[in-house]
Image (cartoon, rainbow, N blue to C red):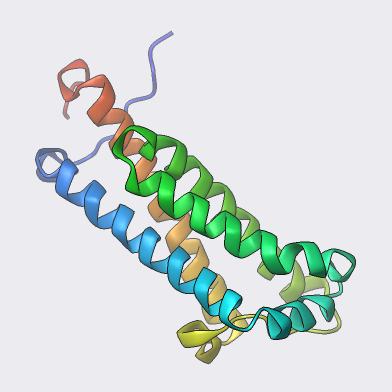
Amino acid sequence: MKPIALAIPRIILRNRNLILEIICYLFIFLFLYAAFSKIMDVQKFEVQMSKSPLISGFAPLMAWGVPILEIIVSLLLFIPRLRIVGFYAAFSLMFAFTGYIFIILNFSPYVPCSCGGILSTMGWEEHLVFNIGFTLLAVFGILLNNRRQEGAHSYSMA
């Protein structure tokens, strides 16, 4: 069975290494910034998590677990041979965060505040759009990384 070939413009394919580096560093910055914002005030983060109608029972675990996962994903993205694992992990985290926000916005009577730093200035709707954008960026990183590993010569460029 032949893999599905997506039409990625030649200019992107020619510059995919640079684009992959930029995407990686965007995620590394995002995850490290978010992780250290949470760790710097972990008690506040835990209290905010405990107010969430969906995950309140897991607040103590998540108060440390989420920032640790964000740091691990950053490390995976930083190490070139582990980058594809990092992209899948980044996609998984962003998908989970996006799903959480979507559920809170659409099905929860109470909308908690659990973001710190710059992201705390965003409303939940803006945060949802931001997360969707980064989720799609992770998919794009996976596609570009797979193209780099498999070799662009095995795909026809239409």
